[in-house]
Each structure stands twice: as structure tokens, then as C-alpha cells.
Amino acid sequence: MYCSVVRHQNTRGLRSQLKDSVPVTGMGPQVGAYGVQDTLRSGFSSVKNELLPSHALELSEKNFQLNQDKMNFSNLRNIQGLHAPLKLQMEYRAARQIQRLPFLQSSHLALDTLKGNDESISFEDILNDPAQSEMMGEPHIMVEYKLGMM
Amino acid sequence: MALSNVLEIPTSGFNFENVARNVALEGLLEGGQTKTPKPMKTGTTIAGLVCKEGVVLGADTRATSGEVVADKMCAKIHYISPNIYCCGAGTAADTEKTTDLLSSNLTIFSMNSGRNPRVVMAVNILQDMLFRYRGQIGASLILGGVDCNGNHLYTVGPYGSIDNVPYLAMGSGDLAALGILEDRFKPNMEMEEAKELVRDAIHSGIMSDLGSGNNIDICVITKQGVDYIRPYQESEYKDKRQKRYKYGPGTTSILTEKIVPLELEVVQETVQRMDTA
Image (tube, rainbow over the protein chains, first blue to last red):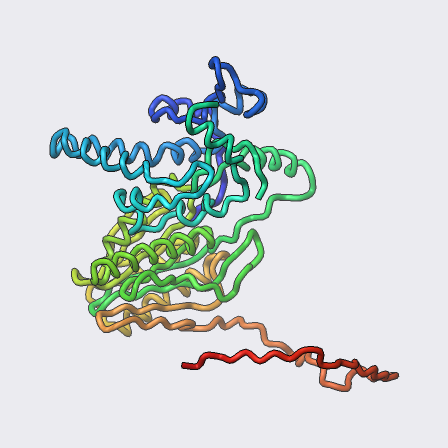
């Protein structure tokens, strides 16, 4: 038997997925200062656009890496004790700080090597490569945002 | 590059920005005359079996796009590693990309470790990948290979289910092919008998299913090496042209002829030496 390529837009069913997944930044209403919708930067708010992603895989793909890490660390904690995930997360945190300025593309070499991403190829390496992105953030604004001045 | 107030860099991987637009477009187009283009599927017959000396994989060569035959000589048996080959049914692009990714990952592994990959490794990588995308990647695959643990044949479904069996058929013509395989399969068959059985199974799939047709490809994997016979058997229904439709020179008569020479003068001449060391 063969599969037919039919996409089911099952937006209702995603409500049950929302509570199981890790909360993700950037998905909810874009809050600026004072905790209100930042209309100048992110446009008008619309409940439909923000609450429910429209593709079956959108939410699971956004959370995938986080969930994998969570599962691996909890496994490691159960097998080897608390020190194992603590040490690993410390190394990840240190490696994550080795980056270029916010608006430039960093290679994440140390982080990739730690996570083992340098020995495998998946869709993250082929599709939508951020190094080939056609949009660049305004350097001043991005640095101010990173430093928390915005 | 266009500057904008982008505060977060886009993540790599799949991009779901156009999903809402596509849903809206589909609603618009259904009422009108135009329809969304159908992806090219391989609506297929693929089969494989384990014999005494190795594994024999077979496939037809037709790729359909809706009701039209898109490709008459499509290659459905993909290379994964020197000792593992994979037949793919389902959406043509999905099977090709998935097997390409799998092949790259296994090449990296064998470069790192210096060993030939095992069939179970390929199966596990595929299973993880296909389950992660919840069947949205429409690829049903038959993996066959010979490694240090023996001869293996596995099937991986589009949602990530696997099965390890001595003989298999997948695709839209699988029921017809499976009938032949169930009837005549014996464990530890000889190579020639196994090739004939796979050929017969694919042939019955071609005869009974609209989505399969044209030629039959066979791939034989043994400890000594791989024999990829493409095509093993050509279709009996090749189009035989009645006449030659090429026009010889002089068919069109020349009425007048006017030659205008193009005057070129040498302005500058530079010589660059090539380093042939």
C-alpha cells in the first residue's frame, strides 16, 4: 500500500499537545515593556494566530530538541546520579557563550561537538540554513535587545 | 540583504510559515478551475527476499503524478552503503531525500569508525527520523543488506514501524507480489531461483496494478559485492515508432542567402601562464 499525501489541519487536536510540551518563547503574544503587546515591532495581535499553530508538526518540531534533552538528562540522572546532567549542562552553558555578536552568524562549533551534531546530518543542516538567510537584523537594535536595553 | 527589526534568528529545519497561506489557497482553488499540483508518487511494486548467499531486491520503474506516468525509467532502488540498498515506495521526493540523508549519516559513521555499517543501524536511524515527523514524510522503504551478522531484510513504514522478515513486498502492487512470494518462497533458495521469484513477483505487480509498470530492476547483494541489474527485464510494451521522424538536411529549401561578415579587430591580448607543475 502507498500513502497519499493528504494534510489534515487538525488544529483542535493540538490543544491537548500544548499542555504536554515545554513552554516556548516567541510563540505567545510578543510582550514589550510593561507586559503589553508590542504593536510597533510585532504587529497587531490576533488570538487565532498566536494560540494554535496551524501545522501538525509545528509545535512538536519547535519543542523537539528541548524535549529530547529533557528526556536524556532525566535518564542520565536516574542512571548515574545528579552530577552527570549537572556537569553536562555546565559544559553546554559554557559552550553556548562562545558566539559572535548577535546579528552575525556563529558556527556553534563547540556546542555542536558537545551535542554530537557534528557526526550526523538531518533536515536542520539542509533546510533553512540561517547562514543563507536573506534577512539580517539591524545590528544596533539586536545588540541592544541582547543586552536587555530594549 | 534587507535590514529589518528581526530580533530572533530563524531556526534551521522545516519552516511552517506558509501553512496558513496554503490552507487558504486550497479553499480558494477547489471552487475554481485550478487544482494544487499533485506530488510525484512512486505507486509501486517493490519486493525483496533473503536467499542463501545474500539478499535480492526488486522494483518496477514507473512514477506517477496523479493519473499521468511521470517517469518511465525511475530508479527506485537507492544506494545506502556498499553493503545495504533500499527500495522506496510512496512520495518520490520523500523516499529519495530520506535515503540520501540515511546514506550520508552512515558514510559519516563508517568514516569515523572504519567499519561497514550494519543493517540494524540503518533501520534505527530511519525509524527515529520517520517517527519524529509523524508520517508526514510519505516513505515506505524496504532495506536489504549483508553485514557481519548475516543477511537481513527489513521494512520501515511511513510512521516508523519496522518489521524483519525473510520476504516482503510494499507499494500499491504489494498484494499481487505477495501472492507470488507466499506461494513459491522457500528458505535458503539458490541465487538464480531467488532472482526469478522476485522477477515474477514484480511482474505480477506490474500486470495487476495501474501504479506499477515499465521495466523491472533487480539488485543482488552478497558478501562479495553488489550486482545492480538495471533493467533486469524491459517491458514488452515499448513504443515502437512506425517511421523515423527526423528530417534530413535539405528538407527545407533555401530561397535566398545573404552573408554579412563581422569585422573584429584585436584590441588587447593577454597571456596567462598555467601552472602545470
